[in-house]
Structure formats: structure tokens, C-alpha cells
Image (cartoon, rainbow, N blue to C red; front, top):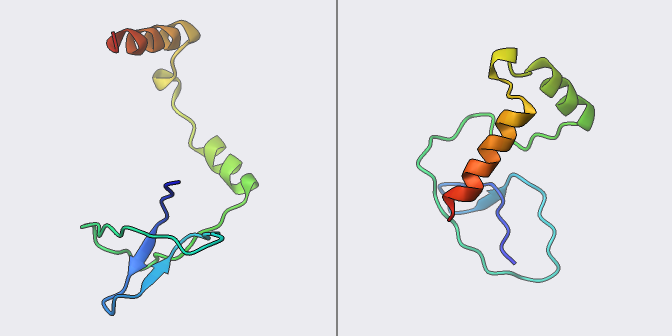
Length: 84
């Protein structure tokens, strides 16, 4: 099973996971170093479902960006046909 978790690799070579990882036996891993600079606040962030719902409510799409059901169905149909 492949699973991806975010981590920080220190200059010393130690790896610090930024997410909880539960495994029941030793596993092989591949580490890919990303070019983007590390932000100083790269610590695990845990939010509650209420905070997430509040964020989604505050950052709604403007009415001009919202599509109706027919437009959504048309886009889905276009994507299905793109595979053909």
C-alpha cells in the first residue's frame, strides 16, 4: 500500500513527520525533496470540523462563479467524452 505523508528533512538527515502515521511493522520509504522553501511555521496543524465548516462558509464562491446543475452536467459529459 502506498501512503504519502508530509515531513521535514533536517540538515543532519533526520526526518520529522508532520502527520500522524500508524504502521504495524517496519516499512520501506522513498523520500523526495521538494524545492520550495520551508516556511517557519511548518508544524502540524489540527483543526476541528467546526473550524473547517466555518472556513468554508466564510470563503464561498461568488455567485458569478457558481454553475447551475445543467452546466455542471454538461462539463461532466464533456470530460467523459474526452476519454473516448
